[in-house]
Length: 182
Image (cartoon, rainbow, N blue to C red; front, side, top):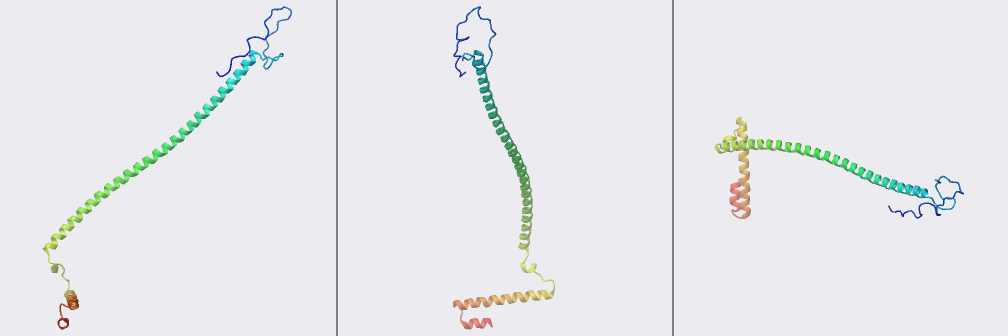
């Protein structure tokens, strides 16, 4: 240990005498200095034991406090890890659901794409075989007359527009323009 050895020789400071003049006395076990100002061996031993036990208690308390702090930190870490694990499991579950939903949507889009391709192919086949004039057939004679008049009016407007453009560019002169517009 870090304490020096006992500075006093064992026994008292005086040589032991075997005199019959003095009655024999029991050993003194008082703590503290004796009458002559010296400290007894038992007092030194008790003091050393007390100091060592105090130091051991202090070190043990310090070690227990350190271990408790480490244990508390580990418990907090464990709680954080459990919360993180739970969040990760929730994220994995949510991602699995989203993947399943995306797969379902992909299948639905493939079916819709096939339907559209089929409908487009059918319409292209029909348009190749049909004349546009045959596709648009009015259901009543009055509707047929309205359709013909509308087509004729648009044809006249287009003709006047292109004649005006030709006049503006100088391709035709004013007499030709007026002759065709009337």
